[in-house]
Length: 619
Image (cartoon, rainbow, N blue to C red):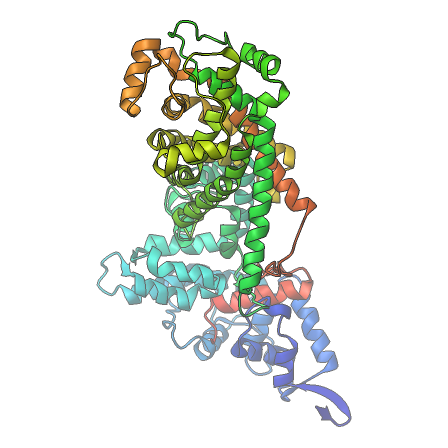
């Protein structure tokens, strides 16, 4: 607007001009008008260019927030800030929902002792009086909601108190947790919450330090308290304050929180920006294409892993099938002897007998196992804290292992019979059946025969995955520190983690694997036959001793451990070599935390609005 040829900002234009960029701080119309009154000292209803610049200079100055408050308090053309002026200003501009302040309270009497009501106050005194008023406001709001002095207020009353006194220091995400986290509140909890919100700078440092020392990149109440006690020399964070921090985030005393879950606590302007209002949804053809892509890469990676260790698997199977008590049929002294004899008698190709059905089974096996594990983990994970307890990890792994047996059992029985028939032919064992192809074995067994030994297969695969997946996840977090400071594991680290996790999982389920092999292989003349798991267990123990249950255990470790390592490393590598964007990858981060104020004027605006909120000025 123009006044006598000069450009001025109207109150509306001024309020629009001072709005923080990107909504960095919530600036209400009432608060903006208070700032307009400071920028318009002549009360003409408009701000000149020079007055606008002067206002920003004031806003950017050290302790500018208290100077701005002082100018608002000065009545008329007065240049003095007095206790009477403070009373008059607060009476006029405080939030109508707030409880009227008792200016004769004991707290204020201590701060203002010996100060006449009309004496000019210094900037330092104004700052301390503001703090006293903020604490008094908390006390009065609590007293108003507990008139009978019961010692506690309801959760609803607590939320009302927060809305009047502390809302400006808290994010919307944080406020959402209070109705469910606090069914009631004591005055000690109100004071503790106010103290926490006043210590956020040091709490942020404690969180960062705790995460840096955490093996799993998470924070617990215990680790947080231990770090705080080490860092703080002249201050402290009480147990109740620690409890308030975690409860306000919707966490329990035993929760393991990721660092990102603390973001709503630290920044009152934390919010979710949604540039794309609707989540990205792929069309049905694109969904099919993406599933096919992931399935194909998983199949290729699984095939690479299976081929890499297949000779070891063949040696393991033949060692497990060898009946040590059958005279004349002890073909191999150990795994190395078995390996040499296979190469000598059957050629290098003999090491890969039965590979084709194994490769056919890799695709559905890996796809189902990995998908089921991820699905169950997602369902059991705490949505608020991101916690996944150990029992849930084990349940997810066991579910994955059980689900794959539908595909793996038929392929296992065909693979095993192909693996052992080569040794029979070369050894010339009496009563042995002629060599068969995979198709002829399937025809001979029939549908039900393909699931012979399925109980033993479940007995092996369920505990294997129940051990493997939790160990693999914790190796990535605890040993290789995946996710710490945004770290992503390299292919080599994934390979090592997968290989190490496979060692205990593979060896501990060897007895079940031995029983499964004996049930699925075709018995020869003179050999014991088994009717089921318990029958096989009794006969193997009686005829061969307890050590027979761990035959091929080392070979199984040598096969399973590198197979999982190679498979996962190959899967990651293939995604990097053949990357395909199906259109569901967000181009920009949707969830952001408003960055800290960096310019002097932004700092001044933030601090001024905090003072306004502490005094419950306007709305």
